Image (cartoon, rainbow, N blue to C red; front, side):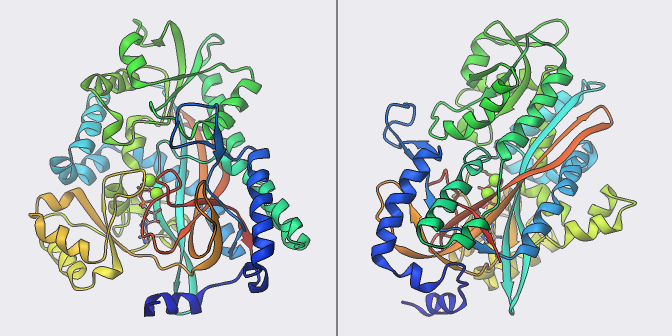
Length: 485
Ligand code: ADP
Ligand code: MG
Ligand code: MG
């Protein structure tokens, strides 16, 4: 074991006492109980081998135990959620800011450039009284420095933020495991959570405002649908309200989609009230040029887009970095110094790499201490970031223009916890883990009138500390629940 591991181990917090974590016989029993409980409660995922079949399914990766999270910090993350909703919504309505923030990035990052191109085209033809639906997830880690803990934002997901469905089901699994482990008191501390209902509330409100009984909500989905049950929880909340839902891919929209003279969107003959993007956030999602044309058509339509193209762009890492510049938050909340302070408190150090003196200084800073930073491209879905010495290799290989495809961020150092990760096909072993807390936000606006602005739930994901990067879908993290301490 190297020094780094020993240092981390000595810092680890123990939400679950040592004698329980190390009781091998009991762990074996709990593993079996937990996996059955996950299946019974619907914490499900299709398998890697047959990702589009519901014939044989398994449990989604989850932790055997909940993980400790300081109560004050947890509530801070929930309380700030509606401020982030407003921030995202305001930034999405500021073409000047988006143009300036992304100017250097779109010169070198072709994916962001293509999104931006759609944005510019839609800007030519603004819609009065457009209905805007934002369903997002702000992710955090708890930075632990000099004995102090602080909530720090990792990123903001404004498109296809996932696990609102499955995380509605995991509390019952951990409650059951803790009861079987004879930890009734802890089991009572597991919080209820139902992001699926809150996300669906936003979708339902947008559907209602669209105002056509016949129109449907379209989930725009990938061709590979391993995580379908996560979607289904949201979908079923809509069916329960007698709102029809269809699932379609870019290809379906290309093949059969059209706009009528009033810009109403039709796909396979059905009028679409809301397009809910659970796809479209990665370059490989746009398999053909027609996929881009389909995205443009949807954006030009009067259907509600979740997210619309401007809100999608607000979720880029470059925008995150530009928002952290002095004075920027103030410009979006001119009369709310308290809101600015609360949001800014969650920002880690974020640094531009754009051409110029500031960018050069930031590069020098990263090269001097690469272990203190994360280098991030404009990508989503986990597994894209660069860490440690590889930061030096990448930065040294780029010229000053190409650097703008990335931003630099302080590396957050959370306190490790011990847990077992239950993952299909892997034996469970005690691992040192790191947690990431996500908070779901939902808002609806029509024209200038905000009609909904809510925090609708949380998601705790936990990964083996050996992995620098990656989420649940990327095969690294597992679904968890906070045990407030
Ligand atoms: P993505 O949009 O691909 O999810 P993220 O910014 O969330 O990109 O990064 C992916 C993962 O990398 C996170 O889930 C987290 O585990 C890790 N990570 C990202 N930023 C940081 C950071 N500043 N400090 C420590 N870990 C980070
Ligand atoms: Mg993301
Ligand atoms: Mg992420």
